[in-house]
Image (cartoon, rainbow, N blue to C red; front, top):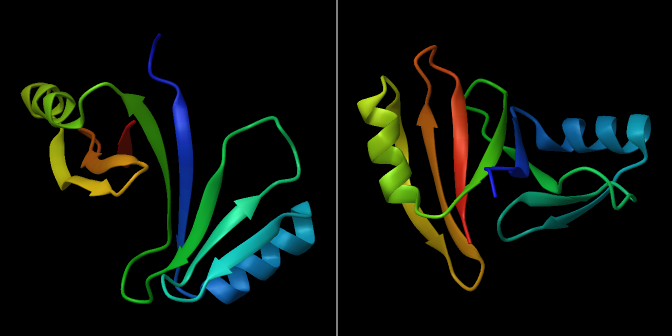
Length: 115
């Protein structure tokens, strides 16, 4: 099956500005969950991958893609054995799946998505 990209996550220092920018430039509709402070992106197309825009004023802005894997924990073990580093350990999003992140040998953050 390979490991397709399942999701993108854009983290901004000011999510309101980022959401407005992407909405205006690309016509995205963004539905913000006020409890999470996270905006789910609807690109208006069946092409491409889904994603969201969140905020973390303390962190550097980032764009992370999430790769589909069968087992996040086992994949993290392979990543560590090949020079990568575990970043965020697997955590469940109830009823949806499991997420984790790692840093590749260059320090680039990449996500894992286990359905």
